[in-house]
Image (cartoon, rainbow, N blue to C red; front, side):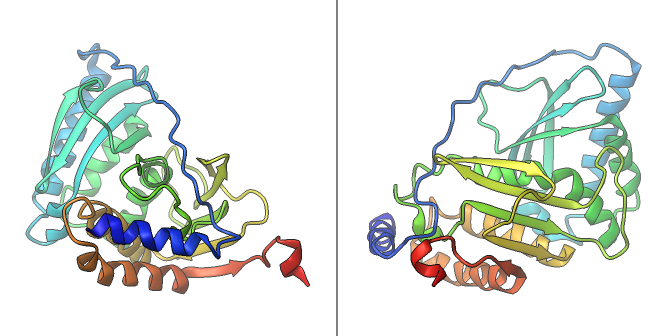
Length: 273
């Protein structure tokens, strides 16, 4: 019933849409599993640091219970260790790590990083607490992979016409840090350009072009955005009635309006006047 209501809403919205993207195309993806064993001490150290970081984060569950709500299958690749690959199954505040990319799994995120980031993960979480600067460091590493996991996911269970989602085809997104924190291997601020080309979503580092709209948010707003869209909406959507999602959809849309700092006058000639 909820999908039928959503489908009807999408059709009604599309009748008056002249701006928003109405079609998503998911290109085929192929994942190479990679090696299934550790080859040297540096790779072992990277794995040990990852497992230590997971243990530390698991110890924060009582203080940050939202961690238990995360459910992800992450394909990780350590680029400076000959593309060493891990599969992380995140659920109930813990994570299981296996070597290589498990071809039987469907990843929710592809996460490229460097061995130094895994060392920093272990150090940053060692005291079972994180500051806003620490959270920004995580955000900077996860920023592009997170956006790709949103826009390049399989949304075939939703109505074919996606214009009701009100997504422009050229978007700027940033999460800023007041203390100008720098992150090893990830120079510059967390900024991205999101572009839709023939239905396919492409995500690039940094700002390019003059966007239809720009969203700029601080770390707390970024966390709220991620929680609403990934946990409260997308994770629950397949199993709950649309009416149960409406409060969170309203919070999400209200937040989008709050963090929208620029909107280009629409490029439809009739609307330029």
